[in-house]
Image (tube, rainbow, N blue to C red; front, top):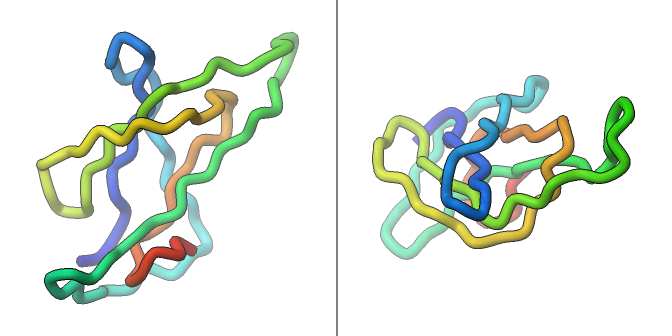
Length: 97
């Protein structure tokens, strides 16, 4: 497996409202994930409003697709929806990077 997973933020109705942008500066490596092993990618964001905004929306779920795959998984999680939503490349293990 190599590259970036797809990550989309979902609103309370289950509609996609934002796509994570690919962060740069992190090396992309090829990893092998055997049955029972894990892979992960770090999703980053911010809860700091910009411009005249005084708060950020909260996204109740993310839709995640592994690199080079088409099957997506909905993950229930509370994520602040201010600008700066990004994803890093997939790595072996559960630590992201």
